[in-house]
Image (cartoon, rainbow, N blue to C red; front, side, top):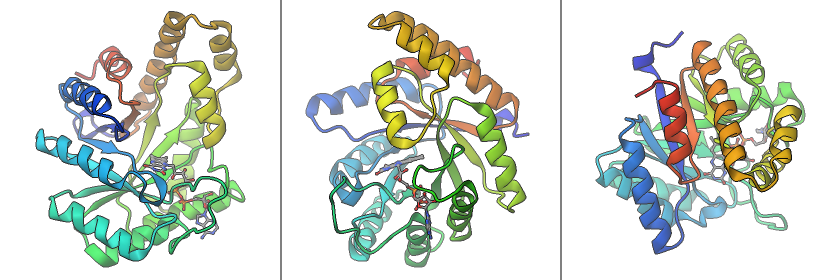
Length: 280
Ligand code: FAD
């Protein structure tokens, strides 16, 4: 079991596309900073589509004295473009990355020079040695494109064997899937921390859309309750806070090494969950 002082708490943002979005993210970050996370991560569009915006968001976080971890995805990219992105982060003193394959928009033909995230991790290690702490993705309910749970675990292990230091999971609402996955990973010889990804519930329609796309299950009882609230956002929020706080509580009680919140660039739900967990 991980002691509370050693736990890894982190918050994920996406890079804003407008000046209003930049200002809103600044206010969100200022609020979440007070909770004392280990780092803030910023997502990266497949094929490098958000490269400059991700870098700008990361530099702002770092400029505020916080640890920033840009995501980097390899699908649709060349070795040279990844090398340039790594060099830019290194030049700015960024020492933490979340390394992913990414998903190309459907119909995009050019997959680029990397097929899977383990190849990216290997490239990062060859190009930059131990400069970066490298996180990778893990899927307690298994990645939707994986041939089988066993193959998916093997893919995860390849990323760790290629040099990843730790993992953040896809979000889930069923804690047993996480416990089972961690047990299987440990049995496969994986010692790296596997931090659960936590999705606060903001809206049912958005959550259902995301979940269908990424293969995360919304348990039937949660789906039915959320559906039954219709447009009653206050009830969705209250129920979602109860469900997600209970999930986090259970995960921490069972020794999860930390929590990674998918904040969707909003501070309020994450802050309330945090306070209810007594983490301040
Ligand atoms: P991989 O580990 O490469 O796995 C992809 C699929 O290929 C899996 O099904 C795996 O089982 C299979 N596979 C792997 N290796 C092999 C092999 N050798 N042979 C056959 N099959 C194989 N996406 C973004 O675009 N930008 C982001 O910033 C971003 N951030 C994320 C953060 C987290 C914490 C998570 C969980 C996901 C994030 N994603 C992001 C989504 C992610 O890019 C997708 O889930 C993508 O489909 C898989 O990425 P991966 O790194 O897990 O890929």
